[in-house]
Image 1: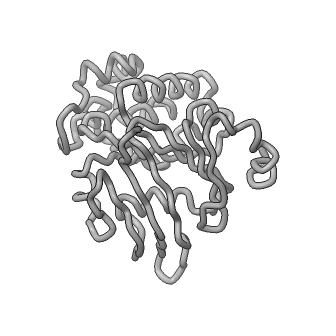
Image 2 (image 1 turned 60 degrees about the vertical axis):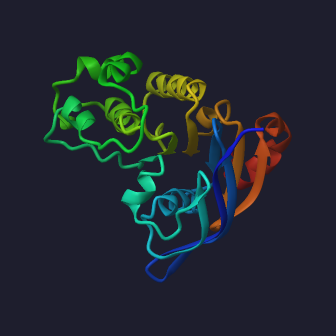
Amino acid sequence: MSKELLRIEGLNAWYGESHILHGVDLTVNEGEVVTLLGRNGAGRTTTMRAIVGLTGSRKGSIRINGEEAIKLPPHKVARLGVGYCPEERGIFASLTAEENLMLPPTIGPGGMSIDDIYAMFPNLKERASSPGTRLSGGEQQMLAVARILRTGARLLLLDEISEGLAPVIVQKLAEMIRTLKARGYTIVLVEQNFRFAAPLADRFYVMEHGRIVKQFAQHELHGNMAMLQEYLGV
């Protein structure tokens, strides 16, 4: 039985007075790829942000590797081995690709070396001295993911990493996720691109109006397509 790495119970979250999450419960086991599905506004990104402490107020329980994190600030959540790749990527435009890679602090053992990164992302090696603004959308996305791999984080929260990218880049990102899973990383994906997420995930959670409305495993995917059509229009 896999070790439980993340357990969320009764999670409520607010932005100001806006109550976004209404009692979210989910678990993620070590080495799993788990995908949060749902329409825009369902609460998937807010769930990711709440895990790392980037929402307003939070109530409930977020246990990371057995440690309660609901009251921890973001920098202490990171030190529990969590890496968050936000949808907006956050590339520093005035720095080169390699300088962007060198920025993150080490939060745990086992972070990838620059050579490891370049082996996984040959495009970044070719563009190492290019400013962040000169990178393509796909290269920026690779850089955003590569940065958190440098830190030693083992739980990766990846928000819409395939959005707006060419199919060939999306395929490379899928290969990257399979490689990371094979190396023992644990990954939570927020994805609008169902075709990208479907073959990668071990388990799925469907969100609607800030709640989990359904969960199922990869082998149950076919039997849940009618439900997904209703919730997602896939």
